[in-house]
Length: 254
Image (cartoon, rainbow, N blue to C red):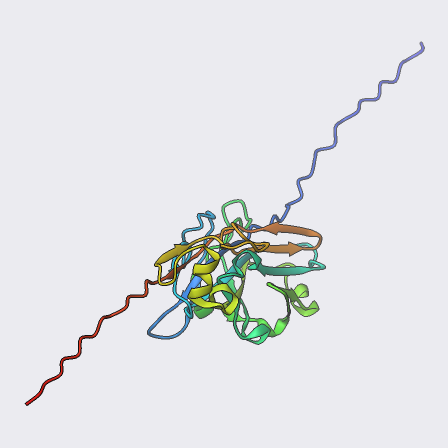
């Protein structure tokens, strides 16, 4: 008897490896007038309507920007790079960064993972007051109208195997500075308006490289070689009218 050997091939079950997909968001923010502290917000739905988004500012007002990054728990390996970036190039006509890198801050706060074990979106509001200041664990650079906070090696190492996710937020303060210091008069001239005209502008006027662009702020979160952009909220400027008061002087004689 000559038998036949049949070899059965059994498919190897596919293993699913959890993938961390950063999901940063950003907002313009305001200071609490009573305490003078920044009121950091989150925009997990990327609505561009949180904090100071869509607000209208006067020359000299203060405003801030936050980039909220997400870090998954239970990472098998520590990232080789973790960065948060804020880029206000499109809003340069309206705002100037205030205080240089010394005024910028990085905060972290413990968060809660979703039902699938991943941290899908930011969730910690008011992190500037409720979170931990970890600025010293980052190198912050400022080049032109872009700031980048890069985690130092010790911070990268602690991201491995965390039991809970983290929200990490970069906060950048600004001063509203119409037309890069030209003031209301320059805004009127750039917009083709008459002296003393009242106007609201949400785009950069004039003939410069940013002309016609909405006054937006954008950011990103970079993990290893993957850069993920944020939403891009905008703000506006307001130039009040100049009214000339006619003063009548009466001479009284006796």
